[in-house]
Length: 80
Image (cartoon, rainbow, N blue to C red; front, side):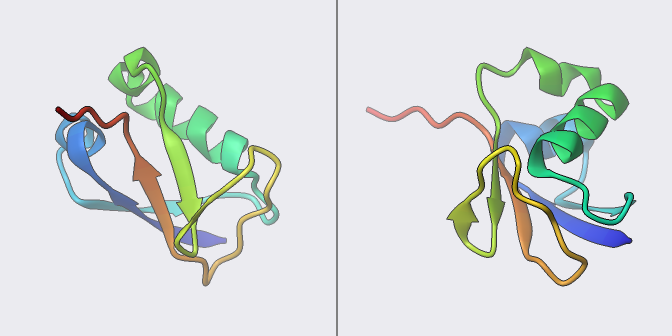
């Protein structure tokens, strides 16, 4: 299945674009997606945390992704 993943902050800088289109197995989990992205873009593995949001809500690791889902990678945020 084809997924579109929006990238923000340092994740966007590491990948070099604001979104990715990926072909993944049907029923791919959020953690499986993160594992694939970390393998394809090793600097992502160095981030302290990296959350997956699905349809505007943070997703648990075992959430199954669907082709029409709105998916985003949310890097760690610092503020002051």
